[in-house]
Length: 492
Ligand SMILES: Cc1ncc(COP(=O)(O)O)c(C=O)c1O
Image (cartoon, rainbow, N blue to C red; front, side, top):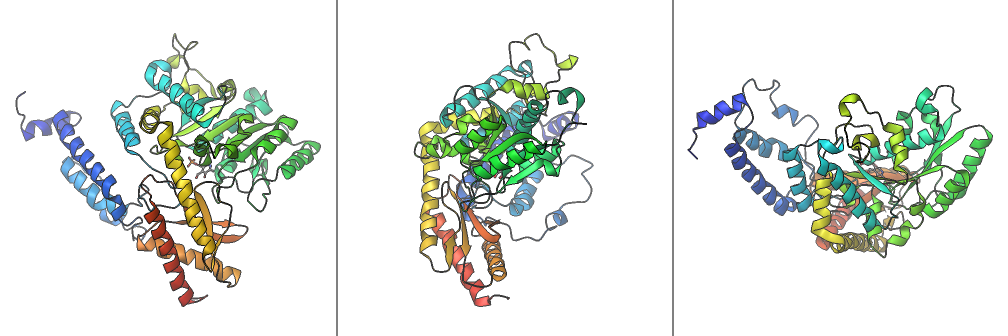
């Protein structure tokens, strides 16, 4: 091949895409950057010490009129983007739910971008459809779910829950598909007061209104009260309100509590109501034999969501929705216009029929890479270690004066509280000040929640790089910040 000049390449740029040799050079550079990043991210501050607007101030107001060299773009990536990151792939990221974009997952994601296929129907890329069927079936086997559960991959649990509840709505009002909900009796979806906001958002999106969400009280361990659920359904039936679905959560957002799903499944079956299980975070733990009993009863669900992008080391986004009767999803969503018809549509799945989106990313590729790279053994070992580290930290908290563990530890996310015996409001503020201090230090990243009316600090362990030393460091940071806050007093 003859050497091509820089100007030839510039011509390529103006006529079309980046020249292949330039792509190769930059791709190698980017791959090297990524490998270095993954090896050293633990040395960076987890959270950038910036004020809102600081990043936009660095960017030109107008878009470029002329194309810019990629070297300059990549240099700005390093100088503008990286310093503005909260590093989710950092071993001391303990906020929200800690996650990992693992090596194999990143490789899958890179290839997905290059392939750029759209998994709408089988022929729009046969392997995208079939690998999605196959990887979700592998995951089902790993989770110990029965074969009738059929999986599709969505972007997020919010979408998965929306789709599941849309199917439940279509089952609850079979003729609403034709007529809409106008003139129908009101309906209700029940979930505990600890359920994720995505459930209520789905209820609103599906036109059931705010009153279409029934919050069921939870007990002292933040688990849904199944008797209260049954009673709420009885009262609604007497009042002419139609129960549409129950959502049980396995791994709630605030405390990682586990709803009593077997009891809830019994209530669902007694009243003939759709049971959706939100195991977006917790579901991955069902792979670990000694944790599987926490999931007893979820086999009775009509639909289940598990997010590999939460605790299964797959880069965002990847959420698997399992449905016992996938035909219910298809009934809720399928519309096949002429331009999407194909000769194999009776014999092959059209993924577009299982949700809102027509265009769908080839997300199965990265999940396939992850499942193959780690295997069952690797996944079990990693999740087991996270749970062990969470218990170690919980033990330190329990032994410390002025600190309290606020919820039982089932998984790898714990809720703790600095508890110096001040007035409740002052203590709540103190816990927020501690989080702010730790985050601003760059040492670790934490987020808060409110449990039983009190502000608490969540520590979520879910990154593959997190070690005992990292957990010891966040505990030292928490105690150090608490010492300063205590010295500042109740109202600094
Ligand atoms: C229990 C639970 N369900 C659902 C969600 C929503 O997940 P996603 O961001 O994938 O929509 C979350 C998010 O953290 C969650 O904690």
